[in-house]
Length: 140
Image 1 (cartoon, rainbow, N blue to C red):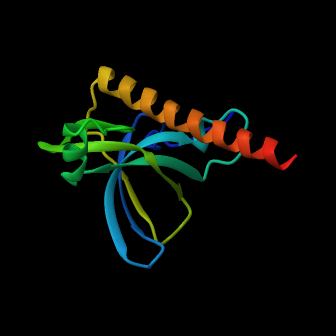
Image 2: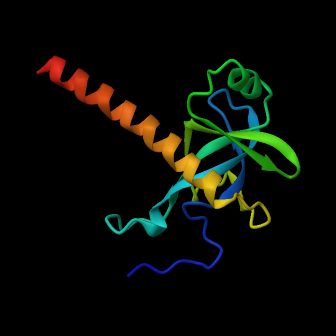
């Protein structure tokens, strides 16, 4: 049985990350945790978490108004309108010294909104799986 600290980031938690993007620029975002190796019964490792980005960019509101809100879920973070982008997936290593992660226990997302995030995230991954299977079958 795995043991982990009481403050471990697990699926359903909101966390803040400071990280370097692919251009080595410092980025800061909130994320909604969708996977934690700590909780993975099939994996002995405990170093990685996966989160979907939460953005306050108002382009997501405009997309929603245009009926093009494909995988985004509106939430409120620190009194500000934001969107959980279920198709913007990031994997973080807890051992990476260039990344600062902080669990945000003060940010509470209501159960019905969490259910919507799970639904949109599942729909995105089902689409990704469909595309992979379709293309694997084309190559065989």
